Length: 273
Image 1 (cartoon, rainbow, N blue to C red):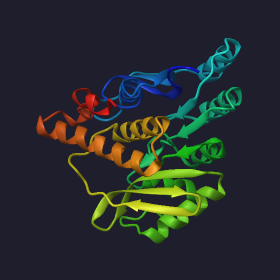
Image 2: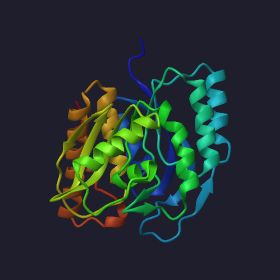
Image 3: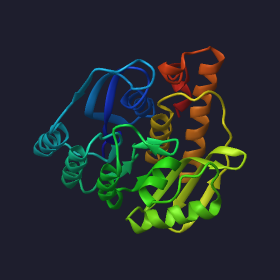
Image 4: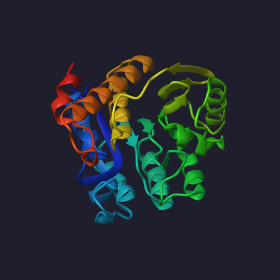
């Protein structure tokens, strides 16, 4: 038996600014999980506040890395799919998954927020991402992304009825379970919906401070880490939310520049178990 679990992290990596792998790798490490970065793109900074970053796509890296891992008898207990960037990389990830059919797949379909796609995405990318849903043990879209995937209108204020429809449509596309973040319920704009089959549970959450980049990556990594350690979904979601809130509040307390991302490093100790 291996002493620790191993997770392949398929995501982008930025040199400065806490987002993507810069958040995910230390979270997994301190939780006692071995993260193996499989970058989809390298950036000098994240895209929120530092001007236009230097960006280096890594064409064919994901698929070629999978071939090397497989030929070297390297296996993964989990695969964490994050930012992919284009349809070609989506196809590469589908090939990657074929090499590791026993791994649990955790998918964060990063493509939009605040009611619309991010600047470099459109519905063709959205539809390409659907192919990953049936392969995923758990999917973690934010509210905007869940609406884009299902064709539901992205409302300023949602309700449990709409979340139920979204959950049903996600299941029709092959999704087994999902956690929807930033659900804008009346009075609780950061609520979380847990959808397992036809069962939907809402965790009502208020805003806790300033809006930092990278909090979605941080929430997903803590959530996934807790699940890898054996926690139930509800407890994992609560603890992930609490940890992100702690980091946000620390950043606000010390006047940390928003563009840097949340104040992560001093708070990692709270993930030790």
